[in-house]
Image (cartoon, rainbow, N blue to C red):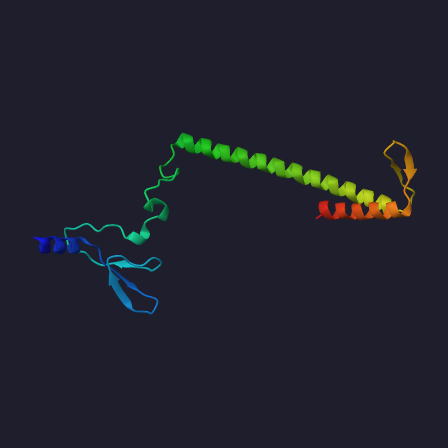
Length: 154
């Protein structure tokens, strides 16, 4: 009886044919992953199981994805509508960010031009009094302005 069970099990197993990395033709009931295996013809009257290599790895452990079942037309429409709204919000945010960056660049360039023009530049000190920049202060301000231009005008 055990012999009959073993013969029935092997008769129901699917056999595959593939070429290994050395170019040799191989046969087996489970092809190695990453090879193009061809199912061998089965005896009539038995159904062939799906090859193990074609099973989605995410589904192999029984875990189902959220997108496995098809969406109803209404749900699909709502999903597309939400995606479109999200894309529009992202585009508006990107446009606002680009405009702010452009404005900051313009301000930094104008500040640098003013400092490099040679005109006397006034600053307000901690007590609120206005005073003219000396040469050392001007050089430090030019270095900061150049750094701002580099940051905003890329």
